[in-house]
Amino acid sequence: MTELIADGDEITDDARARRNVARLAAAQALTGANSAVIFATGAIVGATIAPSVAFATVPISMYVVGLAVGTLPTGAIARRFGRRAAFVIGTGFGVITGVLGSLAILRGSFALFCVATFLGGLYGAVAQSYRFAAADGASEAFRPKAVSWVMAGGIFAGLLGPQLVQWTMDVWQPYLFAFSYLAQAAIALVAMAIVAGVDMPKPAPADLHGGRPLLEIVRQPRFIAAALCGTIAYPVMNLVMTSAPLAMQMCGLTVSDSNFGLQWHIVAMYGPSFFTGSLIARFGAPVIVAVGLACEAVAAMIGLSGLTAMHFWATLVMFGVGWNFGFVGASALVLETHTPSERNKVQAFNDFLIFGLMALGSFSSGQLLANFGWSAVNLVVFPPVLLGLCVLALVWSSKRRTRLAAVDVSTDFRP
Image 1 (cartoon, rainbow, N blue to C red):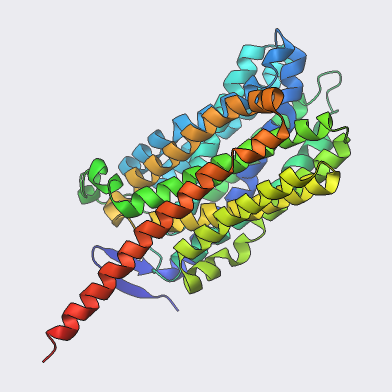
Image 2: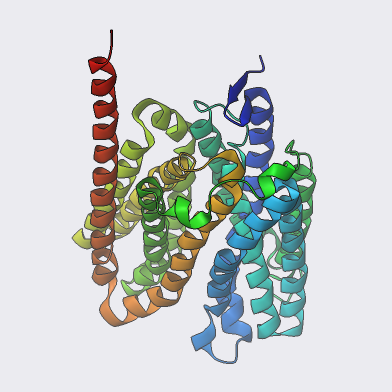
């Protein structure tokens, strides 16, 4: 049954929200193939066509830069023309990514390939807003579940992307992966058809200029805690994930060992999303974020404890679980800091912080590993995780004291 609840200037409709969640989860699965293809092939193609092997990982770094650059424009487009328009434009970038990527490989153009992966980052930036869009118009109780269910689509992306590369990489010999990018363009077209059917009306004229200034919103202690935890959970995980394959190779392990670890890492990243929302609804987002950050600390401890394949696999799996709880929980916390008319600018700014920091980490992770070793990569995890836990505890203990004080005041004035 459709649930309509007036809540300030928002009307919730969980029936429509559930339909949107189904579409956005499917789009998440298809869009995730974009990043999977780039991460699986970017360094290999880069090493083949770059002027120097030292630039081999630049295409992947350009993808991460695209993620950071695309977040604020995504929010502006969604605010002006609606989320659906932003989604269609994003999938259009996905189509262009595939076409240009294939053309770059065929022509041996490293610069064009970097442009293609940058546009792939813009596509990924739009896809990151799917999780927030799923909560639009949903009741407060359903919002955490909507966010987590859309994120669950990522587990299918983790399966689809590598298989897509495996099936298509040799089709146009000797141009390795050229056909893989064309296949990705076709998948982006399918994703475009799916997001075009998302039932999200254009924003009301009042929403274009409504709400508080962004600076006022982001100065809230709750937003600071939510954004800080998101900028810790995601970049820290990404730092370790991008370093792990090379670290395993340096320790004498095989490519098969590395691929196995990354596959289960992706499963651990997105698999918990089937129930993360329910856990948030039951225990609260701050608790789930704290558990996620704690899992990342445990993962780093495992990474420091040994250099066998099992140690690397356990580290990657635990980081995947920690990322899911930390990132999904932090996303749910962001939803509590703004009104409906403020959501696009606030959510876009939150993602800009996350992926901006992640871009810096992407350029530095290889140097950290090469100069200081795998132990240093894991040791870097502890200070930010500890900071996130402390800030989270301070903000929400203060909120709890304020709530209890309000209850005491109302009790004192009760007739």
